[in-house]
Length: 462
Image (cartoon, rainbow, N blue to C red; front, side, top):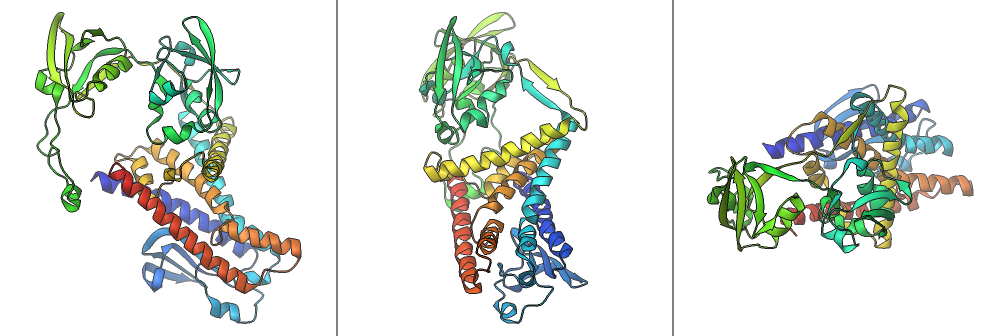
């Protein structure tokens, strides 16, 4: 069921964006009197389709291959590779008969719509829910530092005062793209001393393999045990995929449950070391993987000692109650929320550009490229309308950027050839366009295979 919910959200989000993207091309073409023959969600590869109907001169339908969608514009060399039509004399209602500037607008139509949709989504989200943020000045216990943060010199309890000399108001800015993509100088307060620590612009390559908490997060105090993992007859069995791929299944262990730790217990020490913060607890437990530990806890005013063996993953199977950092909420009016939403959308577009640039220069691994499998996992197994629309807005801006890339077969590839035509004042030959389309198709297939391979390997923990 969880997989179906993930797939359903992905399908809904991408379908909306694909339809709107293609509608951008469709409306621009019709505005200039260009004939559109097909408007399809998904591809009707080899002539197979799930559904279609014809209205006027246009065939509308849903293909069987869910890798996007397309509009077939008469007189244009596209993914349909309709060379027979191109061999006929040009007609006044065909794409190739129109001025270059009109064809350029048609090709940019889908990208423009994706940008508008992204801005609209972030605008409405900002207007409806406002913004929440962690008040940095109220993090009295400072930050908790993961392995990646420690590599650059940060320590548990540090307080971040500024980024590149600008006072840090919202803690979230310290783990935003302005730090992780561009690198930054952090002004740190440590034991009444001011220090300056540089974040390298390659740090995202390490964080992407883990999570942002392995960089920094607010420091949480341990209050009590909230939940204790217990055996589950249904969950503690090999899954369908374990059996299908012959994966070794090891029944989960529940050290805390077996030792008798219960919700409400307050952990005082681990192996005699006093525990105040969650990072202290994690560190003491994780460094004793597959080893026995002694935990002293307080239950209803009485101290109890539990002897247990830590799992090989470095956990004991509890979810703690943690102190909550102080947050602030900001509401925006309808007009006021527009520039905030537009800035969020534009930042996403810029981040995509920076990410591709870092991949080209080798500062970011191409293993960060995700296929629909990875995107579905981000949507999650439960529906949350704020998360759904936030991710859909992010994807809309990502699609706008990806389609602008100068790869033949994408809108950006067509734009490049049109710009060349406008400069040299004559069109690029149809043979060159046909060969470029084939090359672009091969590149896109290779990228798709690579992305799917990435996500499949990640699912096996590789």
